[in-house]
Length: 405
Image 1: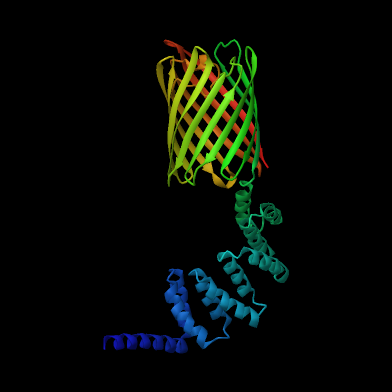
Image 2: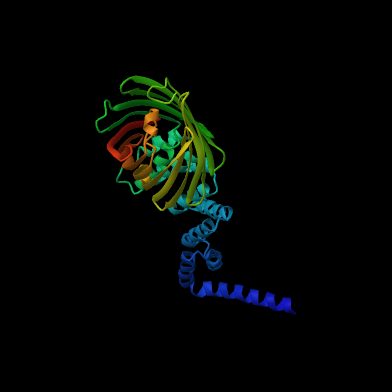
């Protein structure tokens, strides 16, 4: 008896929906649209289905029902409706565009590419829309250069330019090669000779790791070349290892340097733990233990890094606070750096690591000057205590130009 009542109620509701569709189709259509705005798709579908059955020739009802299927993730049902509508009315741009979106949502990228090409010929008044859709589908299939070539055809006045610019940046980031040329300068009060370092670096990104090689040419009271190699090894989506090794003659740079650090990313937190080893000569070797904790807040990042340095059985401490503002659209940032401790901005000869204390404030940034060209300016001021109660001023500046390809 209970089951009979349930079937009776269900039948009554279905009959009521059909009768309502017959009597007030416009009212039900409006109600369905309101429900869809609240993402109550199943309830909206329950209202539109009777309208579609009652008025099968009404393209508005058919397209909207297909849209509801698309929004709710039922791509097969949406495709069936739209293919039938296209067969009956091949000139319907609304149905064509929705079917293209359905193909994209269902990851049918090769079909979507063909549809986008067809759309450019069939509906030239909105060619920019089809260019963007084709480029997105090409990116999904790994055809990055073809996608970038397509996006170059969109003008800055196009309503799809911002979306295209975002996709361009995403594609540019996938480029595997990067080359950097830079110059470093540091000098302090009454110094006999400033330090100049010119560096040239090349890196290549692979699927799970990145390798980099760097040549540093240093000039001061003498000159010297240092060779360095870096490796970034991705372990999973959240973590990677950074490894570094370098060798030189030991006049300006450390004779040998080794380093390693593990980085891990959480939802809004980043953290790392690692060490550096610097061997200047047999009597001067330095071990650095380091780690950081960072907090991402929207487009800002607050980071604290700490160093413990051991030199000839003596341990010294340094703390650095970085406050960074990111500009994701242009792949740029500006960063304020504050430090208290003994470590200098750049590891040169052993003498620079033997300060009693130092305060540092500086600004570093990365600026995109063209799509694949960047400049990296740095300026630092340090107040360092080199003997007890004796202080001097140090200025450090660096400028690098990089290109990816």
